[in-house]
Amino acid sequence: MITIKRILVPTDFSDVSVPAIGYAISLAKDHGAEVIVLHTLPDEAVKEYFPERYVSPELALPGQTPIGAGRLPNPEDLFNSTKQVLHTFLEQKIGPRLLQTVKIKPLIRFGKVVKEILATV
Image 1 (tube, helix red, strand yellow):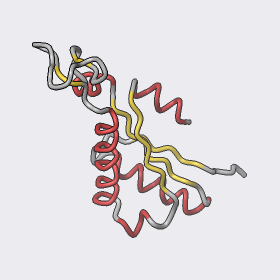
Image 2 (cartoon, helix red, strand yellow; image 1 turned 180 degrees about the horizontal axis):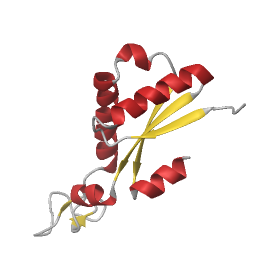
Image 3 (spheres, one colour; image 1 turned 30 degrees about the vertical axis):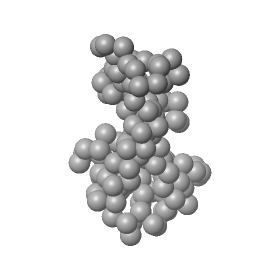
C-alpha cells in the first residue's frame, strides 16, 4: 500500500481549482496527509509589480528621486498580499470547517509556474 504524506494542489484562484482542493482534503483525511496549496505568481505578474527603472532606497538621496524613476516596491508587500488572497480564497471557497479537518499549508512562490510546481514536489 502507498503511504501518502503530502498532497500538492496548485491553484490559480479559479473556481476550477476548488474541486481539486476538496478532493485533496478528502484524500488527506483518509491517509493522515498534509495538503500543500500552492499559488505561484508568474514572472509576468512580478514584472508588472516591479518597474524596470527604479532607485534603490540605499542609493537615493533623502527626499530625491531622479526623473523617470520610482522607488522599488517592497517584495514582502507583494508576498503578504498574495498570501492573504490565498487564505481568503480557501476560507470562502472551501470553508473554515472543512479546512480544519486536515493540516493545510498555504504556499506562495514567485517565478515560472511549472518550474515552481515541480520544485515544490
